[in-house]
Image (cartoon, rainbow, N blue to C red; front, side, top):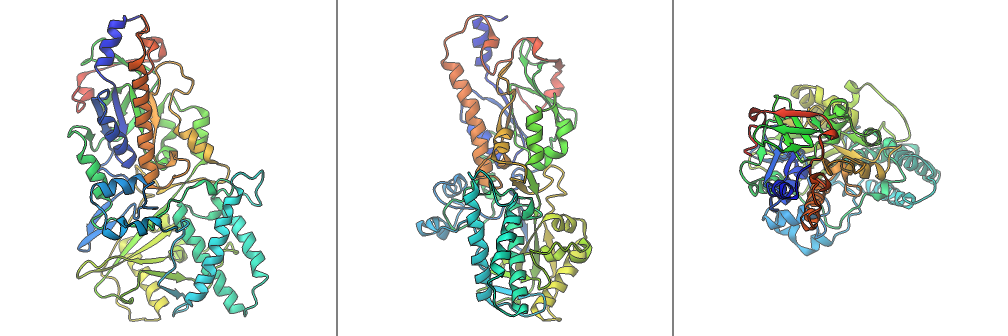
Length: 542
């Protein structure tokens, strides 16, 4: 047992906190903690050579393109990403206008400027608008089932298809127009797959779907790149906080670990890295993507996570949404064109046709957004989700370029349409420390699973408190899949640690037992003991 004087000495040295993952959740947590005097020993361990995670802006085509996060969804005063971006001077005048902040989109993607059919030629924008009104009216109705005792279908997809079948009974047009309506609806289903980050809306649970919260404001972009935001956050941190190229192998928790540079002090957590380096700590905030967690569940934590947390991780959905950028010398689209929709006439959301991926992967592509002109370059950005998106990652650039050139020549009816001169694409499913794009609440899951994932360990309140904390978009019940959800989750966990410290600092001296203070390592009986030599903590500077 240690005296209260020893306790004061230990607390005076400050808490050692490690953040695993340098995305916006990890950076947000680090920025918050760096402002507090109780956490002078803070490190962010980032597996790759860059910060930002799924925010990734690249200089290409003579400008900046977003390989990762694209828009601020709901840029208004209730959105912390918007607030930070405005504070750092990263947004344009239109995005900052009060008018833009008040627009209510309902979370729906806007109508296309032009719609092309796979048979060649354009589709009536009036017909597209009619089908969009139907589709979004039905998706809005899913909110009715949030607190319902039972739902008419287990998934969003099955509910929408059931409703569409009923609406079809009232369609009086000729068969060709009815088939075109279904093809347009199929495109809208694919758009929703991109929004939700899923292969099929049949995988997305109906009951909790309405819990996702849409903020007001017309979605906006960063003129000089989204990564400017994470760069600004990183620049505010002390220079030795970020540790790059440091992938973590295993987080050992509920232990009693020692370090040669801190004689007499023990730590409940030890973070072991792939390169053999070891970092002892009082607290670890885990911000890695859910896709990575799913893949590494068996080896990333020792002891393993509690069964209920493991089951929650397995139940929550995590899918892939990728982008394909095509660079042209001259635009084939009109000067005022912003969004090109591609409608495949032979498709319908009511048919479960599953052609071979290599023959039809490109049919999942929802269309293209026209990027601001980069001088001599004209760039389109296409979106594609699901298994087709993951298959696309396995193809060569040449194969993708050839397939999409054929698609564009076919839909425009111009067999001589010049081929794009280059292609750039994301590969989020293949990325080893991401393994996908973002989370959704899958059939069999609920918002409770996201809350369960967010709960710190140990869960039983025994031993040192808040050893392992969890942040990231998949831990935010109402803003999952978004950058603002990720940022808020990082702030949440930083505030959880700060609240623990503040309550501890205000508490009168408890007497003789250091272990009675939450967050302070308890007796050795709490777990295994491991000594770490000075070499194991290279980079900590402690």
